Length: 630
Image (cartoon, rainbow, N blue to C red; front, side, top):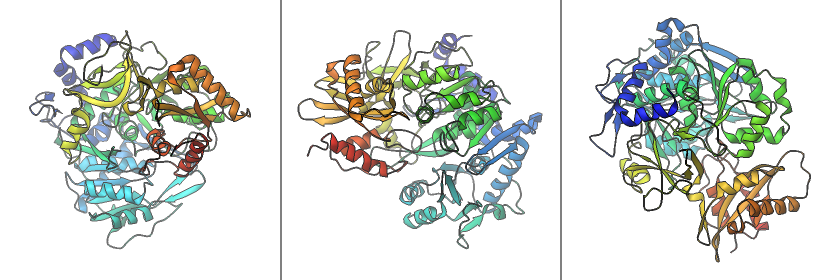
């Protein structure tokens, strides 16, 4: 069956579609039905089933005779380490740590915060919590103390599992002082901490509260998998909120298992035993879904990579990892490839590696600009597949189902809605717009299994944030359009659609034009306040390595290009060259923060910012353009 037939099958009978997908999961007690809609618009899936995530991700593969299969490859250029863990070894490690947590009083429903670098023990910690029904909340390793404290107070964990340090190119980031500072700031105090001591920076342990990773597991009884109800939260993952207070996205156990397992073959086109690599971090949703859970549930080999796209040691790192470990399916953010392209614009390093096992490259996390995709297509000669989803959904909303039927790629579109997602483009009044028109992208309720059913301890906030603007729909917060073939185009966050003299324009469309300039490696466009036109677009461009053209000339060429491609209506005349753009650690450009600086408004320093110093550089650049005007 092709994509259209499968999508129609889901539309005709969603219940049968998801019950069929649930057949691939090992249940302790099978659910009586898929959808529970008694509390609509709050929906739940498979809630009367009983199941364990760790059993499905680890134990069942061992019991099926695949214990010798490699589950995790750890590749760390920053420590010059490569190691492998089989499914049988992973079962031993998770059972041991889970036993240690049980021995310290952690029981089903307790929360455990995980504050770890990119090491295999991070996955062991996540799975150990799932094994005993504890609810984990992974916080990106190295997050500032005050941000970690906010999450401690919201999740009220019984325990925190942390690494002694993280390793960045050229520096060690000590985690323990940040953890100690967070616990001091937080009103809630965990009962104990487990610390993984790394040789690069060993932490001082506080007697009575802190326990060494190895010592706490000595002589404990390994824990069996505890089945939980289908609606039991597997984890809480905090995502940024507009108020500055993070939102705790809840991931329900059963739907999470069913949906993620379905995606591995149908979207990513991998078979059990093949190597899948998501170059992300366990602190983000991609790390949860596609470093830890989905590959292991499906019986794949997953890669835990502790390094960067460039600088560990060079812009060929991705290709080296793919070649060394025979990666079939690779997933990362477009910003990673822009970094590679900027350092190696001719793609010279690619030819040093055997990429014959690599079948497909997937992009997500932000808009994939056509110029970057075209560069990748030219130098890699592989399908470059953009797809779109969110922390809240946990997996693909719009994508290209490579394992069902590879759809024709239209550059600029993440392709088509996946089964489970009835995607609509709406105007401000909640009415569908014509094909090809810009509007707010929403998903008709109910959302499919595995997506957020609520926010942790904040149901009213969940309703207000996602379900109130367009009754009967989930509001994605993204703007875009759908073409005549049903292909979806994500143009910008709703906030990034600017109004220039009454014309609604997408900053994403202007970024596409700027990125097509041969000297531009990366760019961002924001909307700044203007007395006459309401808003004006402002562009920031980073130049490719080796470009020595005067900046003034590049800016003039960029302005001319936007006027030619979009027209005078864009009123595009503000642009400057900068060395780098402010980003989150996951690679998203902090456009909202840049707007606040340009408009002279106060702003809260984003917790996820990669390097706060960049904001000073942006402020200096804005002054050269006359902003803030006051």
